[in-house]
Length: 282
Image (cartoon, rainbow, N blue to C red; front, side, top):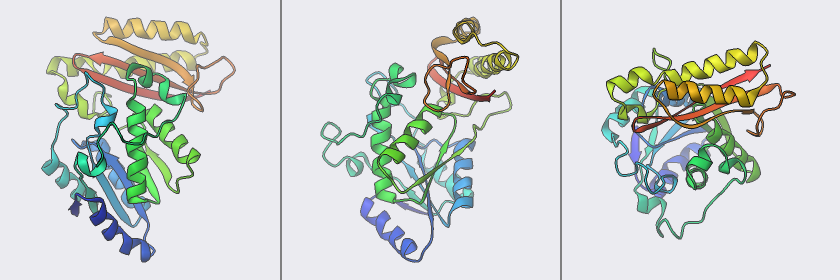
């Protein structure tokens, strides 16, 4: 695996592969890789001839009081994991390489409506930062395929809409959530949890699955189910963010007539904001 830090060097390497007719799959990350990221790389290796990953801690998607400065940086360990998973190129640019004119003057890419819901409401500007950097990385790499995890369900929907709306010639594939033995969705931020918090954190998944069971048993009072779930999370030591039952298609609140639903949840356990979801087809 080659690690490249400049746009010019990455494009030069990929040009020869593209001219030879090889397909390229891309996995954008912020590093501090875990088994979930590894599955994305393995899916990319199954889906294309050449696998490119990026590690870039994107400042545009962090709010004023969020963990940009303390976000884990583990480049050497990440490189070993990428090599073992079959990655060919790692793009690890500096901030000045990605935003040469500074953050404030950077052109922004924004997906309206979807970006203002749920995580977007809790983290103003977050998804604008995500779509801006993902669009820029897609233009740099020009992949045939891009792989995203399903843990951040809203982000996946937003990226797919951006790709469709802007006619970007990249197919976005997804990989199911990877969990530890307790059911907790793997996340780089799980490292912020104390041992006691790690024992409590799987309750987020448990509340989601209980709510899903209630829906599958016939309950359709979604507002009441959401309220019950919030109270259950607080009883288990979480600080509330949101718990919503919505349509898969547009993430709007679900009605009794809707058949394809998704439960979206975010809650704080100590210093870590945890997210999870579950799709339901009625």
